[in-house]
Amino acid sequence: MPAASLDPLKRSTELSPHDAEVAIAYAHALDKHGNSSAALAALDECVAAGGDEVRLICARAFLLGSRLKYELAEAELRRAAKLRADDPEVQVQTGVLACRRARWRDAVEPLQKAASQRADDPLAHFYLGEALNHVDNLAAALAAYDRASRLDPSNWRAFKGVGIVLDRLGRPADAAVAYRSMREAQGR
Image (cartoon, rainbow, N blue to C red; front, top):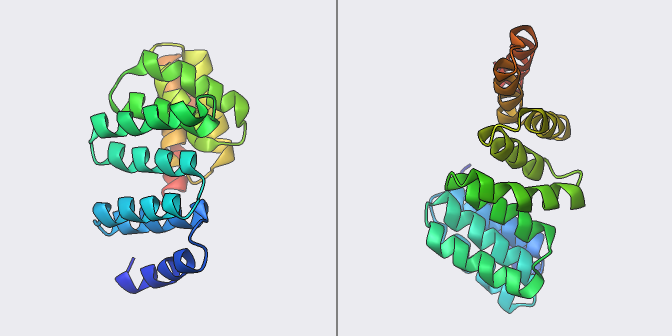
């Protein structure tokens, strides 16, 4: 993504400084350009303008976690939980961070809550599949990965998860179908 492609997103944040969706999109674009400090600043500016503080704090936690700044990400999630502990976004990000830290058992409960509250959230279902697979709840992991792949057919990792679980269940022919779907989702 060329730097010039950031200009429309930046302009959108200027026109709607309190719009959390716009700020999050801009922050993710900045982060992809390697400017994580500007990404975090964009989220902070939106909070200051009256944007959805919990969503923005969760976005900060996601960015920090993706940069392996786990303690800072956990602090952000604690801050968000004080504001709205049962918010599905707080639950998703808590589970995602636990997965990133390979704390699979800790990830299951918040991701189950999030997936039940947001049945159409592919991220919640994918990470729930990851956590359940690692705690050897294979039937539930398969269902979660399958749901994630149906919600987001471009998520090749969800298809890979389906394949891995099917292999673990001793169903190699079905796993092969999932792996072909994975390659198709990757554009191969």
